[in-house]
Amino acid sequence: MSEDKYRAALDMAAKQLSYRALSAKMLRDKLLAKGHDEEAADYALAWLTERSLLNDTLFAESVVRGYTRKGYGAARIRQELTRRGIDRDTAEAAMQTFSPDEAQMLALLEKRLRGDVSDRKEVEKAVAALQRRGFAWNDIKRALETYGSSLPEEE
Image (tube, rainbow, N blue to C red; front, side, top):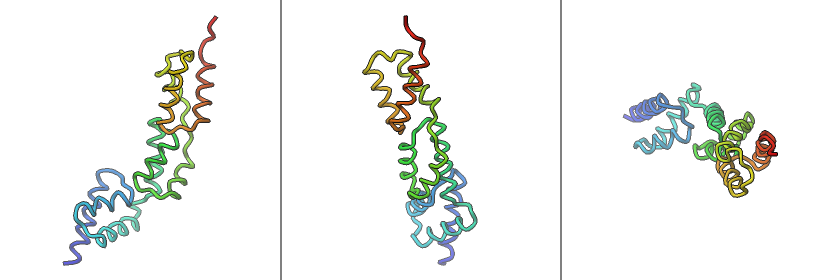
């Protein structure tokens, strides 16, 4: 009978992974929420990890790529990795590939400011929007300088 609980947990884990990639913590939480006991959940995670079907390092790298593509900064991506149960060392290793996408920052500045950097309140709102997306102040400052210098000079 006890073999059945391990098989059921493994089947459920494999089914969850067939839908989308998950971190080990996310998968474990799903198994426990579905009523599997900790021992069976841990067995399923170990079995999948041994066969490289569950890999937090690859999952973390995928999250970094995806959120970079969506136009998020380092702080927001780190927050997302933590939320998904990725440990700090794995998260930092995955973040080594990250570099802020200045083109996306400039696009957001253009959307917010529409070429007008004279309104201080609007510039502050645009900066706040970039900060909420997780960009560091140095990156925002560099993007603002680039954006400002790309505008045609007014006579």
